[in-house]
Image (cartoon, rainbow, N blue to C red; front, side, top):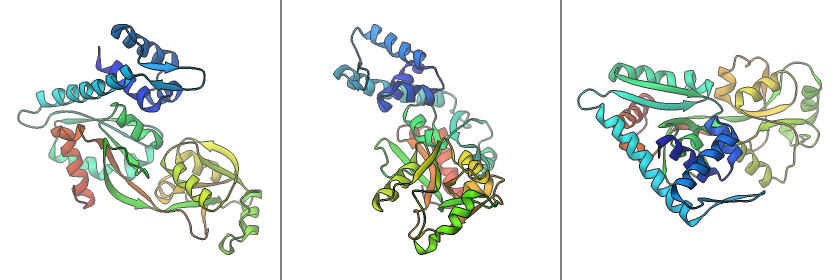
Amino acid sequence: MDSRALAVFICVADTLNFSRSAEILHMSVSAVSRTVRRLEDELGQPLLERDNRSVALTRAGLEFREYALRSVAEWQQLRRRLGSDAELAGEVSLYCSVTATYSVLAPILEAFRSTHPAVEIMMHTGDQADGISRVLAGQDDVAVSGRPQNLPRRLEFLPLLESPLEFWAPTADCAVRQMVLAGETAAGGFDWAGIPFIVPERGITKDILDKWLHERGIRPRVYAQVAGHEAIVAMVGLGLGVGIAPTLVVQSSGMAQSVSRIAVPDGLPPLTVGLCSLRQRLQSPLVNSLWEVAGQTYGVGV
């Protein structure tokens, strides 16, 4: 059994969704399914119970998941240990959004390269909502992510900074802006049911927004569900609707002049941004060194 196949199974076991796993792994659904089938054929028994509506782990699947987690972690540790007898050398896989590469990671990587020049950073970028899933699946050592409301037990999270999570409207004179101005949001008269909203399709900020809306009994008119805060800011700037995004993303997007903050009473809580990694991965000298440099760079305890 190769480590790649084990990583695919871990992802499916965590998501219990072949389509979602295929998105995270950047594979086709059929390729993910074939990989799991091959593992089942090697073991001689099913690892998953499938029907048209759900996927669940069998008893063998639960046991095999624990084996896969241990095996992938031990393999990664061995690879790194063999290259780190003296000077740290090897590879660290890191996942983040495009915005995070220069707004969060740039000072960390500058400091890390100066102290550990022989370590190679393998950068993968995409929707920030995928960061935690990729770390849990063993695809990446570390991810830049918002802190989830419920942190999985296998994860460690290093908070680096906070960014306000705000509602944004287009600054251009358009129908959406006119509806926002007519709503007197500061007075609590926002037309939640009438104004088109652009919201995250998944991830931590979606969870924060859903909870905030539920607590207030608000049911907004959802115009679009979008992957990535950068895309939300762009669509808002084009006048397609109102959206939510961290201030950090807006300031880094190049569209800060195209959107304006909406003052909503008792607004959204700030987003805590930091690094996440599996506890087992932090036993690696390479990953632990990156973790420590990040904490020192942002002046937080590790």
